[in-house]
Image 1: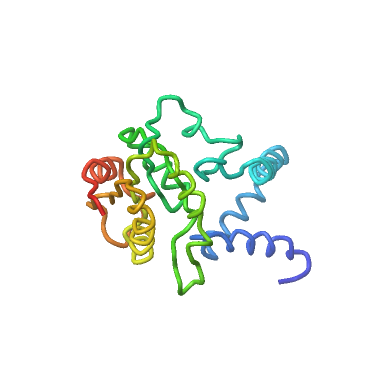
Image 2: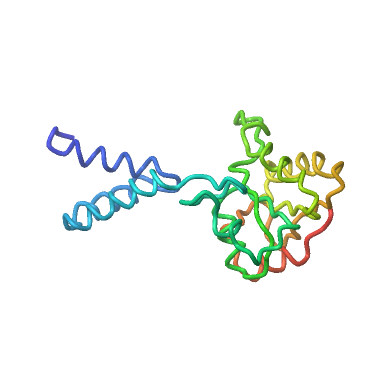
Length: 199
């Protein structure tokens, strides 16, 4: 491409770097942005910048928030005796949509994956274990995805937690093995929470 379209190529390239966005989708997004008004572009870039600058990890559960603690950890009506451990902040959103779970969460920000060089120390494992020193925690629900890595992470964490005298359970899966929680419908997730099993 010539020099005049280099900014367009760069824009397409930036969209293409996003997960799940192929070259054609990146082109569509880039041309959509080009057709936005100056005010729309300003609002879009401002939203991206503000999110990047203000969103951080909750000091308690490691979910994403723009405050010191997230809305769940700050909620007075939540059952703090049950912690649901998930891989990703999107999993918190998926479970919250069910309106069936009233405990709190812990977000690992990944799973143990030796092939990708990710060990327990690369997750929020230490933060989880330190939360369990509080004797009010009675149950930890492992809600990692039903993948090889998700299962390995659940088993590893359960081996750390069980000696503390805390019940460890695993979601019952009507969710297919290899699927991601964020794509499961509310009814399936509700049933998985209800039918969880001890590990």
